[in-house]
Image (tube, rainbow over the protein chains, first blue to last red):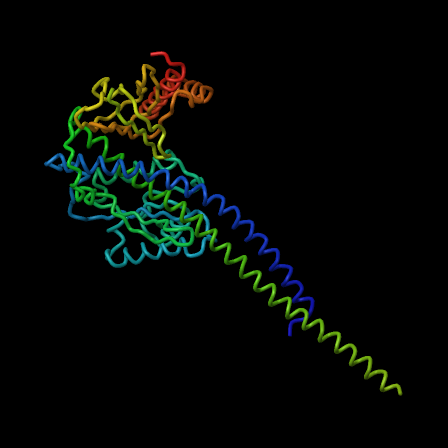
Amino acid sequence: MASLRDVKNKIASTKKTSQITKAMQMVSSSKFRRAETNAKAYIPYMDKVQEVVAAIASGTNDSGHPMLTTRPVKKTAYLVFTADRGLAGAYNSNIIRAVSTAIAKRHASKDEYVILAVGRMGRDFFVKRGSNVIGEIVGLPDQPVFSDIKEIARKAVGMFTDGTYDELYMYYNHFVSAISNEVTEKKVLPLTDIAVKRDTSASYEFEPSAEAILEVLLPQYAESLIFGALLDGKASEHSARMNAMKSATDNAADMISGLTLVYNRARQAAITQEITEIVGGASALE
Amino acid sequence: MKTLKVNIITPYGPVYDSEVDMIIANTAAGEIGILPGHIPMVAPLVVGAVKLKKDGKTEYVALTGGFVEVRPEKVSILTQSAEVASNIDLARAKEALKRAEERIQSKQDSVDSSRAELALKRAMNRINVHEGNF
């Protein structure tokens, strides 16, 4: 059995740890509330943009715009959204696993895909593995604004347009509720899924022309998809971290109560032993 | 008199949502006025102010590009950022104006200067909208 002092030290250190995890939980929960508000505020914008893009794309019969046409795939890009820090449960590992599985299934060699990493955890993983990381952004604030990722979004869309790669997938954690999120794979480019929604019957007049509008609108649309994923991912990140820290705090409390029991038992045993020794000593003198 | 529902939506949430009599917006092809019953239309917008006329009064909202979607009974304006005249932070806009002017004067490469010019336009637009001079 561990000595009294060992158990006491262990209780003290577990208490310290639980104070830290408790503080981190509270920080995350306040960040989470703001991130959730941001993600929710973004939904009406996204819906509207999607509606208009779908209406225009279906209104113009010759969808010859490069961003709408599927090309034979020679190279695929993966835009991976992870957090900058760990301590968020399975948040990062889930995404990294999903991406790795997809890559292992789809590609035979490292020349067939490239990685665009948002967040330190994902970047470090793919750099270490020797994948071709062609774009990265780390150290994003907790409440990102569009200009924070403008550069990488523009780059991601630009490299598709100039033919560096022929399709772009993004991987992020979709925020479902405060206690759950799921890894989501979304094909950003080419924009094939928007033409499906042809129910918008309104035929628009285009000023100056449909092509000119698509030229402006489609890159914007792709960039807003990327920004939407970032906001969604941030909300899940904070909720994941909040939950991870909450269960860490709960576990620490369990451990402390278990250790306290051990400590009390050991203390009692020591007292009993002392009494036995004194009684034994006294009776030996008689 | 018939009115027109206007929605100004940004990535950070809706900024304006109301019924108005007439909208005047700056599109890439020039200034257009939209009255109730307009045919469905989509047009890209340039940096500038959108004027919303309501009961004889005019409200101004500063926009940084984006586009407008017109339907007979409803108009949606989608933009990266929109500010109602009364909410504009004049000090911040003036600071941005100064920064942009300095950057243009220092004459760096073309990408930077075109970006600075855009920033200058946005800052001037915000100041103009705030002070209501057109």
